[in-house]
Every structure is written in structure tokens, then in C-alpha cells.
Length: 580
Image (cartoon, rainbow, N blue to C red; front, side):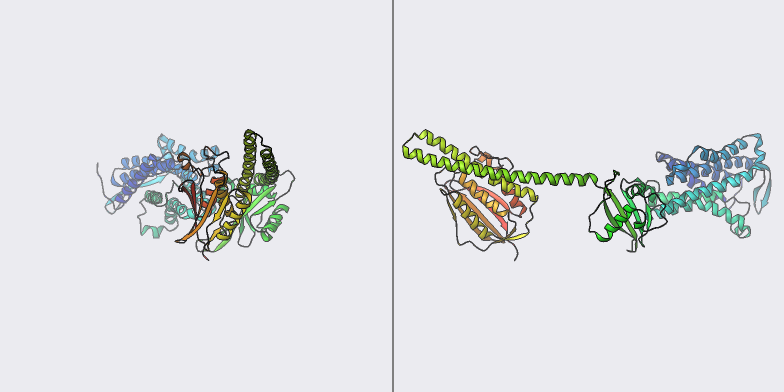
């Protein structure tokens, strides 16, 4: 078998190798919807190019005709795969209907049957050998089927190119380069053939007229798609059309141009705004009555823009409009994006929550007031009754029982005071230290209040108190009120003593509250400031010290406890001094 070498043989062989490599990569990643048609496209191109490389190499007319059949098979695998790849890449399944697929496959199926049958003459009627320089080429005479093949080929390539270009128009800017790579890959073979057809003399100066450039063109396609896969994650990050993005969201979306006119709105926005007419780039206020209400709110209202669209039974009577500018990378304003969020459930929940909070606050105030008053009355009457029994010389057992009644009543009063502090803290959530508080004046007030409330206790504030401004809120008084009150009510001596001292050092102020009570059990101390923590002698709910730590932490400080000498406990609160 005689063989020959032409300058074009290595180029065509290299094209076959490139396309085979792309086919191999695509087949390994065929789970992706677009990789399988890309693999078949590249495999068809590789078969076409390999067949043509052999045709250029052999000199026998019979072998050249045989390789021509191989090229036809590759061509009819390549073309429909190209179309399916473009559709899969664009994720435009509307094209993949049975009639469209039948039309796309009809010509390749017929062409393959002709190639493998005695009717191949309808495709290749005759062929002779011609010598050009030192090389022998096949000079074919085509049959009528070639006309069908040419129209079909151009139609498929143009349709594939239009699918991709349509995606470029409707996609986001971030994917334009990626789409451009695909468009170049599809368009190069078409452009090459058009140039050879329209400018044959100019093309002959570059490539001999007997040389088929289609395999070379599709090698460019393979290289472009392979490079796009490496550079832009071509098929792993396929572009999403902006229409799909807008229509796929559960919120209403309105796109305004730089002139304020509506460019686009999705189906949800049409339903919310009751728009059933064509846009024709009209101002938002002209679309419907609801759209006009939204436009007025955006012009005059302050965010958040919550708009009641009506109580007519519509599926979105309350929406929140969120607006964001649409800008290019260099800051040029293209328009504005309006997002319409259905907040009907949220607004209803907030209204119910507000009503519930008002009721809870009212009930809390009522209970604290009535319980505190009744408990104070009970404590007062029990004390008077105890004095009366003591004067009459009655038994100590009755006096002990009355003392228990008085103690319980005083404890109820204490609980209502703690509940008041907790209620204030809960109403504010996380407390912000926004005010500069005179710590000395605050401590004097809390000490004086404790003296008037607990006449049997001795509460002293060591002086002189240094100037100590701290950043806190009005709830800071609850911290020291709770510490002093705990020291008194949990004491086991007849006349409790509480010493409060203030020291400034290193940008901080330290306040100590020392008592002469029974101290704190070791097993309780580790979790003393946790919610619900109580000692054996405590009958409360474990909220007082938990509130103390929560407030001190909100004010940027720390609280700790240690033993006092010779007995009792010392609570220390450290707060940062405010900058003045």
C-alpha cells in the first residue's frame, strides 16, 4: 500500500488527537447533562479528522473512498451532538421536544443508511484521483444527497450558535466570557467554510482547494471548549439565565432602568401588584393601583417599606419592599432592583406579640402591686400581733409561728422586687450601656433604700466615695440593690451588717458588698450565678444573682464572690470607668 506525506496531514492528525482527548474527558464526566453530548461531538470530530488524515496519507482511490465513508459517519455523529450540547449547556429544555429531535436526527440517520448501502452513490456519485505537486488527492463528484447534507449542516450549526447567543443576552455579565468561548468554538467551523465559499481565491492562498478544513475547524472547537473547561469551569458552572433567576425566586422582583421605568418583573411581582398588562417600559406608578402605592411609599416613606396592599382577600395583603442599586464594576448605575417580600405572617405575628406583651406587662404590674401590698400588710399585722402576744406573756411557740409568717411575707415582698428587676431586663433584652452613671450617687441611693426597708440591719457605705463614672443604664441599681438585699434577708444573725466599699484602680472601679452572714456553701459557689442556682437556706427562685451577673456582663464588667473574715461573704463587682 503506497502512502504519501502532505503538509496538511500532521495538522489534521493533531486535530484528531485533540478531539479524541476532549472526547475522553467528556466521557469520564458524562454524568453532567452537557458532558455526554460534548464527548459524542468530540468523538465524531475525531473520527472525521482521523478518517481524513488517512485519506490524505493513502494514494489508492479505493482506500480514499473507504475513508470517506468513515468521515461521513463521524460527521453524522458530530452534528446532532453539537445541537444537543448547545441546548444542554444553555439548559433550554424547550428545544428537546420529540419533533425537534426527530428533525435533527432524520438527516444523520438517512445519511448513515446511504453510506452503508448500495445507494452511497446518492452521496458520492463518482471520484477520481488528481495530482497536485507531489501529492495525490481525491476529486469527488457529489450526488443529490450532498445538497440536503449542506443545508442540514448549516442549519444545525446556526441553530446551535443561536441557542448559545440567546443565552448570552439573557445571562448575567459574569458568564459572558464563558459563553463567548462556547460561541467561538461553535462558530469557527461555520465561519471557515463561509469564507472559503464566499472568497475562494483568497482562501486558496492559505489552504489548497482540495483540502477539507472542517476537521481543522472542529479541532479549534475542541481546543476552545477544553480551554473554557479549564479556565472558566465551563460545564461545572453553567450560566443561569437572568429570567430563570428572577422567575425562580419566591419573592416578587421588579427591575427598574436608570430612568426609573420598569424593565422586567417576574410572575410573583405581577400577582402582588395586580399587573396583567404589557410593560412597554412604563413607570412603576402607571402599572396598577397597587404599583402606584408602592411607588408613593418609595418616594416618601422611610425603610423598612412595609405596605398594606389591601384586605380584599388577595394572597399578599402586606409586603415589604427592599431596594438595591444595580451597578457595574466601575460604579456606573444601571438601575434599581426591587424585591417584594410577603410579610403578612410576620406582621400578624408582631401584632399578636405586641398585644400579648402589653397584657403580660399589665398583669405583671398588677400582680406585683397587689401581692407586695398584701404581703406588706400581712408582715405588719404579724409584727403587731407578735408584740401584743409578747406583752401578754404568751408562749414562745406562737411567737415563733408569727415570726415565720412575717419572714414569709417579707420574702414575698423580696420576690416581687426581684421580679420587677427581671421584668425590666426582659423588656430591654440585651441591655446597652448607653448612659454615664454616677456610681457614688447610685450606691448612696441603694444603701439608703436598704436602711429604710430593713430597720434591723446595719448597712454602711465606706467613705469618702471616689468619683467613679461608669457607662451603664438605670438597671445598674438593681445589681447593688439585689446584692445588699440578699446579704440581709439570707443572714442568720438578728441584726445583719452589710459594708459597701468603692475603690478605683487601673481604669476600673471595684464595688464590694460584704456581709457577716452564714457564707455560701462550697458546692453552691461554682454555679452561684447560674439561673435557678440556690443554696440550702434559700427559698427563692434563683433569679437574683443570675440577674446580677447578666447585667454586669452587659455593662462590660465582672462579678465574683469570696469568703469574708471571720464569717460571711464578699461580692465584688468590677466595672470599666467611663471616658469623660
